[in-house]
Amino acid sequence: MKIERDKRVDDVFDNYPKHVRSKMKYLRKLVLETAGEIEGLDSIEETLKWGEPSYLTKHGSTLRMDWKEKKPDQYAMYFKCTSKLVPTFQLVFGDKFNYETTRAIVFGLNDEIPVEDLKKCISMTLRYHKVKNLPLLGS
Image 1 (spheres, rainbow, N blue to C red):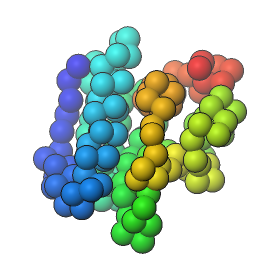
Image 2 (spheres, helix red, strand yellow):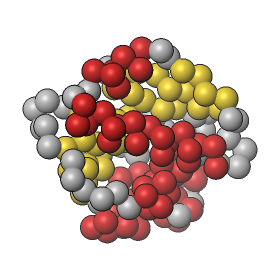
Image 3 (cartoon, rainbow, N blue to C red):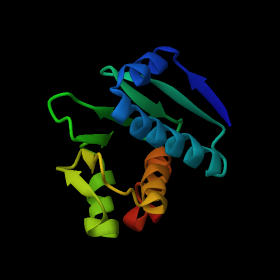
């Protein structure tokens, strides 16, 4: 798996408060790990969009993540709000996640992340244009 990295992403992670940094780096690890498990996915781009760590693949939808000072007790993964992603996550995973409308999965700083379910969400996102016409995005 080739990872095309924008070095500015490291600065964003380094500037998160210490108690948040490990949470954000864990999300990053899950995204890269999941990408490596997707058959036929040869590369992923790690870059900044709107100043937030973002992940792009050839056939995927952009996945962003961030922590914001105005909501200091939470961090989130963001998805294209006009896609079927978050509405499908809500159908498939129900209340295993907290959602922000059709654009995000939100985590509290003390939440235990359902890792396997989140990796399924990540996989659907990174393959979105290949699965968007499948029932429940092929979940």
